[in-house]
Image (cartoon, rainbow, N blue to C red):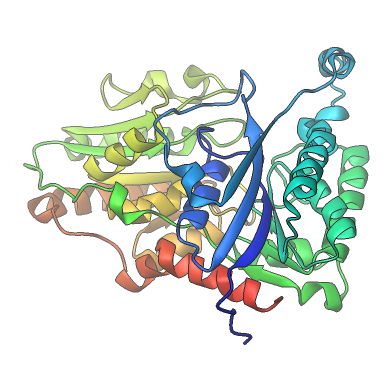
Length: 422
């Protein structure tokens, strides 16, 4: 492996989302940059985020200090396109929003801002990195690759054309596959958060392109988590942190709880399941919420990022819930934060990336399509939490697995990828 030189590497990066944006992409990119040494980064990111983007003023207020230069470029979609998008949405046609996303118009302003910066500073990058999503960031990388003729790393937090959650029709899929193919062919390295995503995306391409793929997971920040507190054991709190939407619903859990209540109600005495975040695209009454006793399941609004970590640390147990599928390639960033919280984890998730990681940690995993096993696993999980409450101040989870997701480890793996190219 090539050893990185003593001279800092000039890294030109684009990530539309960066703190104070409050979403997983912003958190993970800033965390990576915080732990990079021997790298001088010029970052282009968004400015004055849209009204429907979550903003958290408390989210890593030092984020701009992690890079050598932060160029904030406002996203301004043309008024005619906003108007046409609203009309198209009413008829179920979302061409602008899904080709690849609404941020495509950000590209021209970014290219102009970077050209102005390089023109006044004589700056030249050694390596380019683009972070998607939004996948429009990678379209900027295509232009930079042509302009600077230096190695380019395209980092994917999710699949692109193969993303089952995007609801692409045949036209959307053709358009996005064409753009994805251009990125895969021109990038020098393509980085994904799991091997399952690598397999899903890269099996469409020739081997010479597949050899560019690398896996780089998310990381958690140990310093942000409170030490687990000992609890009195009289109550059990299990939390899910994150949004629920479409087929990602608590319906399998509700069905399991209803069955447990009918046969062993005492097991659930003093137990509370909390969902922290928003829920859309489904009605709670329709999926069985009204059949459960008051107080067993509670819903709380979204909180800021630091508060979410405190809620993870103070819970007795944590939950991952994913939509039913034959296989899931997604690595939820909240699962990595769960690892940092060091609390027992139960996953109602299909076979795949999240299920394998929870199993490796020593947690409980159920396919959301299997109601019988869901009920059995909920029983086992609650029983374990009751017993563990006597010693709940100890960190939970396979220590070797937890080490793999520490930020120093992830940053070192990223620098190894850079070292392959310089």
